[in-house]
Length: 323
Image (cartoon, rainbow, N blue to C red; front, side, top):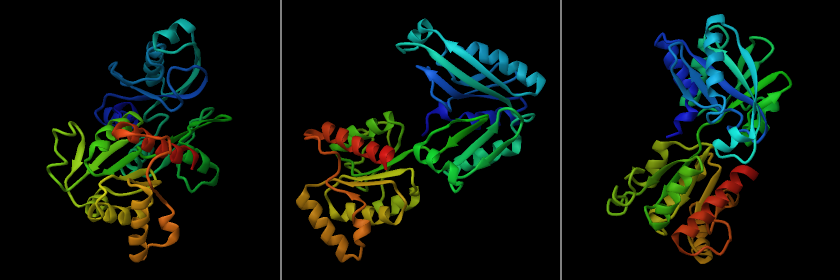
């Protein structure tokens, strides 16, 4: 699941519907070593409830006060705070910086219908941008089909453009790992630390045991059926680790029909060559075969499950960030 810090629009909608009132505070700009990145959010209710963070604790109290006042006035506020070196050190940074925070009451400024549409798009894993004209109360949503936003969606980059704040809401990153092997035991925790929602797929109960993968989401089904049920999109990476064509090949074929941004397959160069032969015989095009990263992982001389997992994670990151 996505980190709860990323679910502030959902929380704001819940609180508004419950009659508690809600204000969304969003980091829209930073300079220097800001404690929280652009796009970080804090939601505040009329009864003093709060969830999320815009500064790691440095200025949260001041933002809550401003949010409570914004609920009373029904007006948005664009705040600016300097974070001193001492305050920054307290939250784990070497030096301070400056942040700007946009405070928006739900209803008077952020229309409830628009917030509902934003939450619905996030639930459906549809990328959407929330655009706020900070000098006015003009707000609207836009998708990646808008040419001027394409780079922002690809780079997952929210931020200011003149007086406009553009908040990019991409679906949470997801990694589907086929094969409950030793490498997977190292890869899944790494993926979660890097911001992915990992799913382990293996129809073999002896391998896909809770005792071997405590706390992980495990799907005990044939890979092609599992991938179809989970769903594939541009925010999904697929990694096959079993070495068994009966399991890996159906997963590969399923992934190639989806729009995943990364498909990596474990195996030596010889194993991969045999895999390519099988895929060609199955009618897979050269272009689709070229999408496969095989042998999987960056060439860093990795040895052992943990190092191989590092190499895989590095290659996925490279593909995500550099295209």
